[in-house]
Each structure stands twice: as C-alpha cells, then as structure tokens.
Image (cartoon, rainbow, N blue to C red; front, side, top):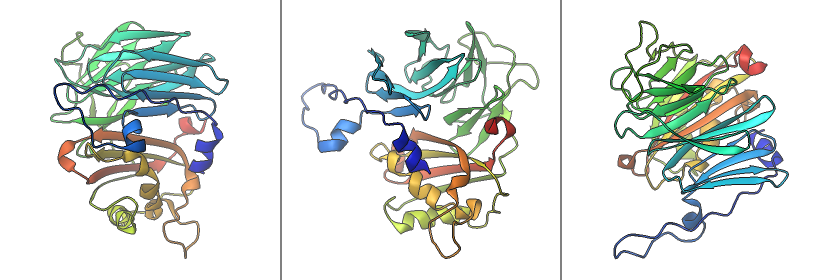
Length: 324
C-alpha cells in the first residue's frame, strides 16, 4: 500500500545543489556517488497527490505535478517541513535550527523569527487546518503562531523533543528522546515572546495519556537484515493486537550522524505484526499494514549513537477526525 502511494504522485525530485565548500585546508571528502549527492536532503512532505516540498541544504523546494516550482534559497539549517491545503490553497511551513520559520502562503514566501529561548535549536514543525503553526524547540518548549501572535509552552521537566505531530482538533503531540509523549491543547495562555512560558494551570504541556500501544527499542543490526526486524519485533512481542479497523501509527527514529534513516521505515513496519496482525498466519514479516491510514515518520540525529538506531513506536485506532 505504501509503495503504491509513493509511486502515484509521479513527481520529480529536484536536482541537489552541490555541497557547500569546506572551510580551511581540508578539501577532500570520503563521500562518493549517490550518497554525496543525497546527504544534503533533510526532509520531505507531500499531500499524497500532486504537491511535494523538499528541504535541501540551504534551499526549500516546492514542486507541483503540473510542473510549477517555487524555490527559496539562503536559509541554512533547515530541519523539518509540514503542509496543508487551507481554503483551497497550499500552505507549507519549514523551520531551521537557527530560529527561522519559512512559510509559503498566498503564492509567496515569508520568513519569520521564532521567539525561541536563547539558541535552542528548532527541531520540528506542524500546521493545523486553521493555519496555526506549532514549532518545537529541542529543550525550550513549543512555540505556537496563531495569526500574528506567538505563544510559548514549556515542556515537562527535562524533556528533549525530537518530533512533533499536529492533530485534527488543533492540539499537538511532542515525542521526547526517551520515548516521552506530551500533548498540548489549543487555547493555552500566551507567554511573553522569547521567554519560557509560565502558563495558567492546565495550559502547560503535560504528559498525555499514552496511545493504546507505545514502545521504544534500540537496534544494533543493519536494517537490511532479519536481525534488525527481530530486534524491533522483540519490543512489541508481548503487545496486544490493535482492535480491527484503521490504525494511526507514528515512528520516531533517533540515528547517528552517518546513518541513512530513509531505509528504516519499511523493515520497522514489517516487524509490527504483533500490533497489526498478519496478512497470512504462515508468512513472516508480512503485517496487515493496509490498516494504516495515518503514518507519521520523524527523525532526530544523535552522533553518540554511531550506527545504532532508537525507534519509538506509537499506535492506536484511527480517530474520528482522521477518518473524516
């Protein structure tokens, strides 16, 4: 199912820009071939039909199946992208770890400064059906833009964010590096721009009730091997199978600086038959993944991991909002 969705878009990936010149005397690189060309692609978003947004080193590409393209250059450190059709027009947002929000709206690019705390890196972004934007700082909290007004909410103590997902009701869920899940509600009281929020009781980002199934595993094997799948499966081996019907699935990967995370999603999902059920009882690594109607993939880079991968998996039956 997922492969068919990816192929149906028929969109052309823009050519990567050359890598930036090295500083100082070191000029040679060990990178070769496709890896050297592709390592500057940081994130991608698609509406699943004809619109594609790609974050490249220093550039944001917005491409349409009709051949139209809009490119914004000169914003470095781009980390995450999200988009949505609002009132019949696309709105796409991206963030850089240097504190900039990039937004495509009404046929033009905008650059906005996020009121982050100090030099806190921005790691994720989401936009809801009303056009409200939520930006996650690594440790400095959530920054929410509603119209022209920023709000800031502090994380639960000692949480380090790695991924963010907006929900249909305007709330949002933040994934922490240790597998924490925090949920923020719409309508929280605004904090002063540029400072850590001190919201009213009940407005603070608090640890939400967990999804029906949530697991974290650290893998040491290559994603091309059965050992990788066995390690992931071991984390969900005792899980109760989700009740019949559509499923929402989120997977957040924490990877080392040299690890290619783009080849992790399929073997990870192939290992989730304890949650999803099997297509046939006698077939290994063939879960009933046709149940997945809402899939979110996130990534965070932690150089200390080397070639290991930490995967946090959250799954639950699809909500009524998702089914609409």
